[in-house]
Image (cartoon, rainbow, N blue to C red; front, side, top):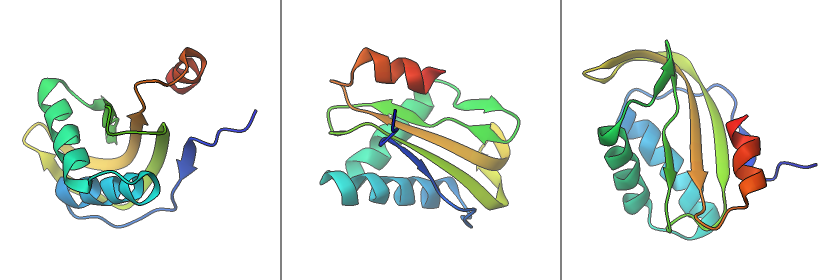
Length: 114
């Protein structure tokens, strides 16, 4: 089975959370025709509701939102660590970003979760 929703990005340099979120939003917006600022805001709001750090140096920013028309998972290794992501998270080196379309099939959601 082909995972059209999965994208690996070669190691990239970012200096802040804002740079990462702007870039991620651009990837989603350029392919799905949605508003970049709204995606950034949704990511920030999700981060406020709960911890996105799943391991030391590894983040899982994720949203399930009507703005997302097609599910996408982006694996984004960082060429250089981001020293201060936010007051609670430091030394980020890998980002696994998940953008879920609300109408996504349960099978796909299970695949992503595993």
